[in-house]
Image (tube, rainbow, N blue to C red; front, side):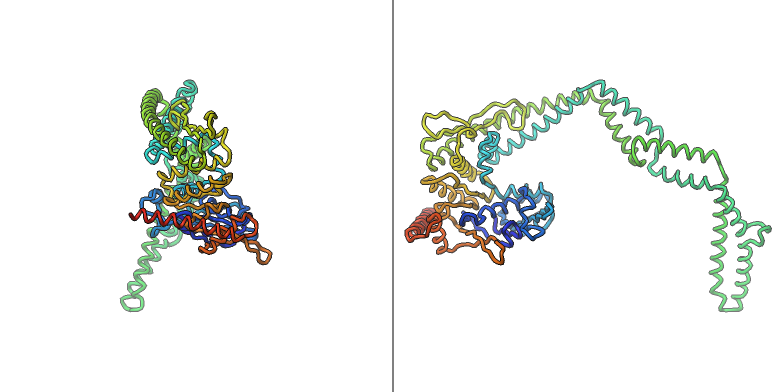
Length: 572
């Protein structure tokens, strides 16, 4: 469940920390105080699209953080493990920074994550019910999704497998159609690929060849000068007498003298190995220069061959890639496509067999899903009818109709459509065509109540579920929310005292103005403050009377007495 929400620089909120508890948490306050702003903050921190306008005026960024307490067995623990993360000491922190330039940073447990992972984790933790979701009942495509959710984990798992089967089937069909699309085009493509692979293969390229050739070309272009300089240097070090005494001869004489000197002079001994090393290095250098002179003897034919090889490589680079590695990768890709096209007849036969297998598997699983849906539909019809009668729909009729779909497809053999009639004698029609706002609100609450029995989402958030509801129906709505709160954490924005009096935790939202700046504040009410807030809500904007305070007291007493009776009965 949500344990704490931290909000900084978000619209009218400069800095706010709100603690929530188990059961039913209600948010109340006068009109215009920003009750729905906290719900907005919760939706935004869990990944909803957000405009940079949400950043409080004068700030460069907004910061939102929500702390969840997790219990063992929560599905989100598996999602965290798959993403290489874990909850620490049963706590999970999700945070979001929203910058004024539109940039966003999402973190889970302090680790930056992509939005997709962030949203997926949040989806397992919180279920939002606001006016938008209520209106989603007007979309018939949403009815099937709700039915599958009511069906519980087993039905949802079967539907997910059905979707995977359909995707595999559709991909196999797409590839098969691509093969069959144009035999002439395939033959033309095969010719092109074969020529490209042959051209690259004939070149016999080596990965490091170009660099080596360019170095050799530089050497060959300067070969005459290299041979002259290397030869002259060799002659000076180790050559004929017409260049004067060779360096090795002179150093050798000096070394002989130094050895003789070292026998009679202690100070000369350390210089002997140094000069011996110098002589060895000069001799080695002379040999290297001789070898370099021999290698540099000009071979015009070799230079032509190197230039031709480099020109060939440049031509291939213009066609197939900027580097030799690119050319060789192109060759592998082209060869793979060529081989696939060469084996296209085998591929076609294999694809046809795979499509038939997937289609048969889809049919079998679709039949299983259909049976599960019809069983769920019967239970849903009974459950919704019972729940809605308690919500002051005395004469309603609710049915789940199944409209056939052409298959295979991602949803199965049928599309579920919720049919509804509020009055006797009226024909059943789709919710999308007849339900009013208040009716939609109560129908969605009834569905949420039933979903609470099977749904593993720990926190349910309702934004003004009381909209369009009044009279005795409001009391029934309050009791439904309280019942849902016994199995889930519920956070609810409400104007209705009938709902607020059932809260396990009552939070009041208000505004404060200081120094010309307005900010939103939230505080938890104690019992005495709750009674005063209930009296204000009962007064409906008028002066709070003693009668309103008395009514508020009686409402709270009725709720607390009812809970006490329930606890005694459960103990017995």
